[in-house]
Image (cartoon, rainbow, N blue to C red; front, side):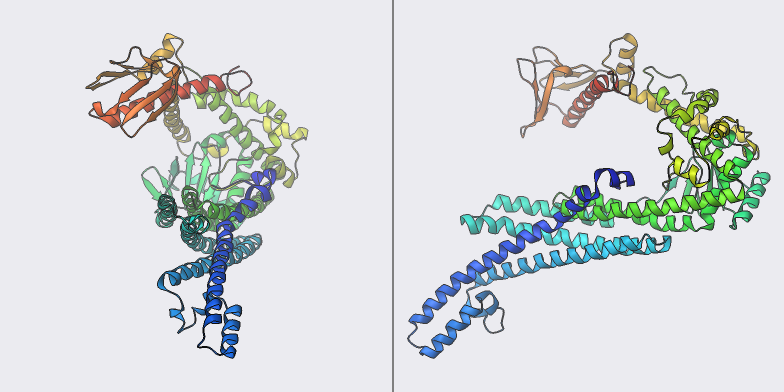
Length: 611
């Protein structure tokens, strides 16, 4: 549910986030004015009746009448009955009504005042979070706990107010009450409360899985020695483990990681085998010095502390969003989540610039700039290769992603700087955001427009650090093999959802995944294939392309609105396994709709597909 800084600046914070956040005051403000009005109306009627009785009461002297009239003219009955000893001034029904008004007004005021206080407190916390990582963590922690409690209280209070309004609006203005309306509002309020309670107590998974192999110190001593030298220059300790994988990034973290079947805690460094092959030794030095600088700046410690808070916050927002009536509270809390995203982004930029500066001091501006260019160029080219392979509309015998990258990267790197969006590209990272390439290049004293940038990018890497890892070729090959097999399998799974078969090959792909289903019912045999539904009692098959709508009524009958003259229905009661019928219809019809959308949008000229 979080938003990026680009969303913040492009769409306009006030219109997109701040104004919706004010909806949290809508229900309590309406309730406050409504119940004040009703209470005042009741007081006016009661005053008129009491003053009339006083005037005709012959047992009172003129002075007593004057005193009594002054009392009831100046003090409303709703306040008088709250004084001890005055409870008998109204009957039980009126007392209950007044108590309802009194508590509705109180709850409305609590909601409004609480909203203002929490708004100011959270705004101060966001403002303070810009000062440092420690302050950011403390302010986010305080703000999160306050907002969580406040959000739950608001859902409960506003649910009660809505339920009260559902009765009193019709009862007061129209002298009737609508039980169905009250039941619906009550159920919606309970659903919202239930969604919030669930999100509060939901146990979230705390495992982070990383694809790779842990490189032990005794297996690659040269690697660890070089890393130790860099750590000494950066003034930090060695990581507890080094993980080598094929993802197109480098990162450090102190979060617990699961690699294969083993869990690792402490300080972890992830290195990309594929990228290490593309970098010169000094460029790799710069990258690893950058990563170790995050350790020296305690960046990973605060990321480890803040990350669980953000995960809890986002799941809480999801609960509020799904709660229906809790949407105003969602918009209120989401406003501050977006503000914190801006705060996190700004400090993240500072961390990255600091790490770049330290890496530049340990190596050189040229080494850091060359590493940035090659990493982002490689990541961009890998994404292009994978997209091109994935868009192929045929069964892949092999998804040769690594081979395609190896063969084409040098040519791609030669033209990479001509990419019009190059200045906005960022390095990928599983736990953090990064400044743009242009900003980072300028910060280390280089320029994308400089001819030297093309020279750095075009110079092939010597893979010195890759060679320091024992059996690096074998490790990389095994990981690419596993990755490409998953890639190929997923590609094959998506193929049937792309075709409205026109050739024998396309038909074979679709039929393999969606063979004809036959379901026996008392009304005859139901058959469903990739293009139509057939029922023994129907005059002709119902083609998916002719269906306009499908609905199920209370009699367990599926009714199809189609271009056919004769309506088509399936009486589910005539089938032993009704759910199986529903699932088959949904699955095969969904495939048709997905393929239709793909053919209409992805493959049409002017789209990102084939032209």
